[in-house]
Image (cartoon, rainbow, N blue to C red; front, side, top):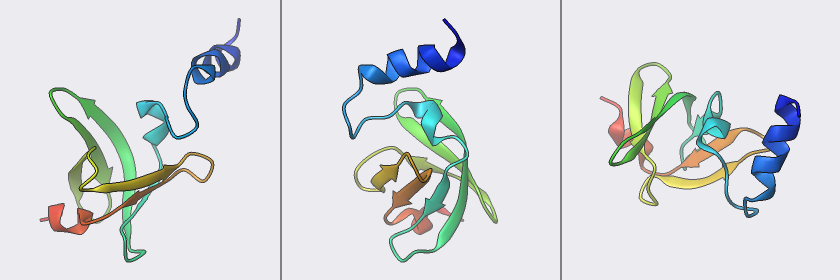
Length: 88
């Protein structure tokens, strides 16, 4: 089976609102006031899952409800809230 078929098989086990970490890569990151913060360049999976974003600066967003509103897989947009406070 080819790569696309494997991905479809993997995806078949996911619920509608679930996604794979790799789906986040190259997604646009937009804060709650519609400010574009950059693009996801990496997902770091350790004790906590962190999303590395590159915009005017590189910064990390924890993958928790305090910072993530939703992810639109079709549009490749990660909607965030309070994420601007993480840029310094």
